[in-house]
Image 1 (tube, rainbow, N blue to C red):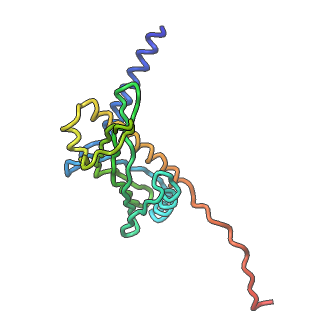
Image 2 (image 1 turned 90 degrees about the vertical axis):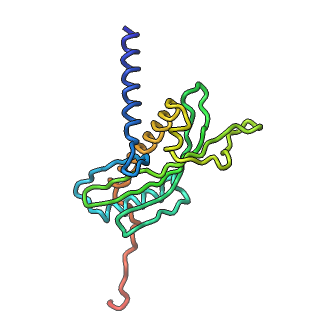
Image 3 (image 1 turned 180 degrees about the vertical axis):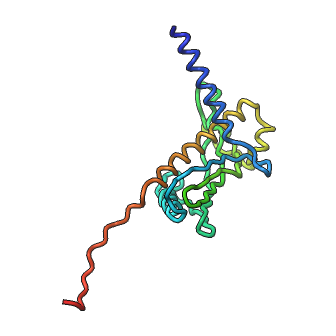
Length: 192
């Protein structure tokens, strides 16, 4: 009976991992992209934009990163995160992946996508520390040709998980009204 539950749990975990990987697909330019649309009925585009900007400014992941704003209806920023080896027992950093986050807003909904992925591989130095390989940067499309399929799939899964987590945070930002500081009452000294 225990074995049956273990087998079912493993099958569900494998199915979930495959579903995660499918979230990162190719776009019309044959570049990898993580794309999501979220509905926020009854909220205007300006409100979604302001709430997202406020949330991104407080997020630890984007500390010190200046978003590029275009035409007041979209936010673009560049950032990076670390990929880990998931095929061995001892996890370690295998590299950083930089990306571009684009968010666009309309009344009642917004969409965001991660694209322009560039992988910066690490190697172990003589001091036992993982450091970036000089001039080793490559796009995700090139990584697919240079690395084993299992390794590349684990990278796609980590990108999908990161994009999904980022989307969950953005849902919190867009659903929460911006807190404003209470203003002290104003006194008109001309009237008494």
